[in-house]
Length: 256
Image (cartoon, rainbow, N blue to C red; front, side, top):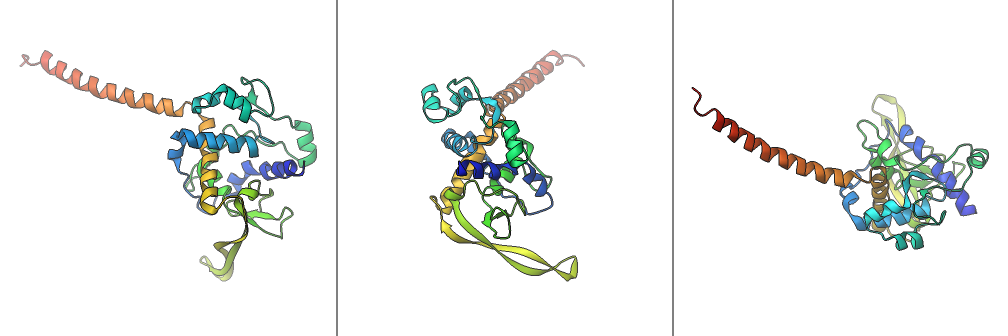
């Protein structure tokens, strides 16, 4: 129950984080090609169900759509369905809205479109934000939760994936404000490890990339098919243009 509550607190501020990050640090680039990697999407689905679906719903996604990423119905039922017995149901959670508002002050946002809806001009896409956000948590004893985040300073949520990543602290240095030499600002320099997680740094980055890939795929499951269809349409139009050009030349060749 304690883990569930911490996970919920950690996720409540995910949506507002993108807004707070506007004008802040530059977001890391999410490896977008991973959205076309079926194995990565399957790993991301596993992480989503185990670490996100406890508190967040994906009410516009049905479990049986996971067949589109190569999973069988038996695999879905055996490994990914914990809140329902019907594979045709949507990905809902049983946390009551009333209870969520009473306990935490807000209802956890639906994550179906989170990777598509969160973006900021000059900083990147929603996938870039989530990818950066989940990798830049650090310990901060001045905060009520004991956590802070570079992508969303003074974040109100703890780190839901800390057992995977481990714990780290951020090293800042005071530098003169380039706009006002009489002022100083805190500039981030690096992270220092405090305790190891169950994954090393590379493994954790890969896991977050898989999770974000699944979130992006979930926002538009037909994206890959639409892109493939678009390529064939362009090829058809190119061939038809050549045919039409030659027909036009043949029809008008005797006209002076």
